[in-house]
Each structure stands twice: as structure tokens, then as C-alpha cells.
Image (tube, rainbow, N blue to C red; front, side, top):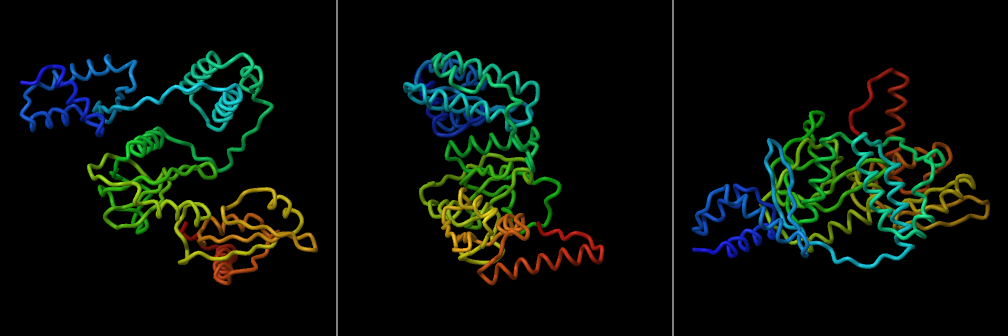
Length: 351
């Protein structure tokens, strides 16, 4: 017969291993021939929560559908001293982060509490030098094309972040109604390893590695209806090559239109050439100013829809020097656009 202390340690070890519901904890105890009621499991969870509250761990609870709860243990980070410069950067970033999103009244009230808490812990010097109390009319944050996160999107975002932080596999339970017959997305209810969260041009996307198909996928958040936990296990270190490919080769996160990495050379006139020179576009970029003042931009990237869209936004302020396959892709798109305009055709559904 296990003592209450031994039972608490066993349940604690379950929660350190991965997230559990009360039902899952109960079933694992039964397999160990430990017979206690589910009500007792709740009591042990309460004891664990109160006993580790000020320690190096913390009991977390995630609310699921139909009031189903998942419990897990999160390690607290060691508290380090914060310099005035770090406080100032953090306060400023917090202010700018809030300016980026259209918040509900409840979210504004919560952020006000968080901001007040931050200010109360920061030094007076840091508070005076920060912009937290600046009037918002002095700042303008462009929201052009920004995704309006629904409650469903926010829930999926935080669930993805949680599974990611716990090195846990996940499953896509359902896709949104607008998604149909798409061969470039993983199957539902199959184990997916979370690789990366993208915040790109005001939109969120997730990168996964499918254990079944042995390849990676990237999907916009509004394509997903529901995410769930998968019991599959993995070693994230073996997917470093996939992560490197995602980080270094793509101009954005969409699938390539043609195979391979291509040397892309674009020529810009002096204006907006100066704008091009002074900004980061890709890790492979190399710049060259010509004798006539024009600017050459060299990239080694995959050719995807985002690269086409970015080049197209410069209209007649850019010239594609190479490769030929990129010129062909543009000619095809321009031909389609001309056909749609001249013959009043319907737009093509290949975005």
C-alpha cells in the first residue's frame, strides 16, 4: 500500500512527463495496481498545487472543450536580476505589442493590469525613460493585411505553443470549412511534430513535420479548426535539417512553385534602390550598387508565391535579371491576369 506522500510523487512524475487528464492519471494508477477514486486524484492534484506553489515547479491547468481539463507541471525559470536597460526594452516592447493588436475590452483590462505590474517592479529610472506612458496618437502601427484572430485561432495558437514547449506531438483534428481537396496539407488525426511558429506580414502560420509522410508542412492558422494532443513521441534534435531548410531557404513560408534553390537577381532604380539597400529581406541577400546608381539584389531562395508577390509589389520599379524560371512564372501569372481582365473571367483558385 502506497503512502499519501508516495502517491503524490507518482502523480507528480506523471505530470512532469506529459499533460494528463484526471481520467488518464486514474487509468495509469490502475495499471500500477493502485486503487484510489477519481475524486481522490483531484485531492492529490490540489495538494500538489499547494505544495509546489513557491518551489521550482508549478501546476498548470488547460481548459478543454466540455469542461475537460488537462494538468501538467511547468518548471519555473530562475529569477535573474534585470538591468534598467532591459526593463526599458521590455516595457517598450510590451507597449508596442499591445499597439499591434485589436484587443477586446477584457484583453485591454488584462493588459492594463500586466502593465501596472511591470511598472511596479521596474526602477523609477526605467519607467521615466520608457514610452509606456506616451500618448498612442504619436504612434501609428500599420495593420494592412493583418489577420483578425478569432477565439478559435487564439486557442489553436496557444495550444500549438504549449505542445511546442512540451516537446509533444499534436494532431489536426479538423480543418476549416474553406479547406477542401488540398493535397499540400497533412492528414487529420496523424502525428505532427511542431517545428516553428511564423508571424509573417500580420499573419500566423505553423510548420509541422508529419511522421506518417516524412515531410514538413506549413499551414496558415485560419485553415485549422481544431488541434489536439498526440501520444506519439520523438526526438526534436533529428529534425534540425528540416528547421534549417525552413529558416534559410524560403522567402516566406509557402511551398515552392518549382523544385530547388535558385539564384535570384533583381535590379532596382536608385529609388527604391536605397530602400532595398537599407533593409533585411533574406539571410542570403547580397547587395551591389551599379555605376548608374541602380541596385542589384542577389538571393538564393526557393521560388514561391510570396516571392512573386513581393517582387510584384514593386510594379515597374524592378527588373528580373535571372533565373529564367522566375521570369516564366511571372509571365504566366501576368497572362492569367490579362485574361481575367480582358475577358471578364473568374479569378483562379490557386492561392
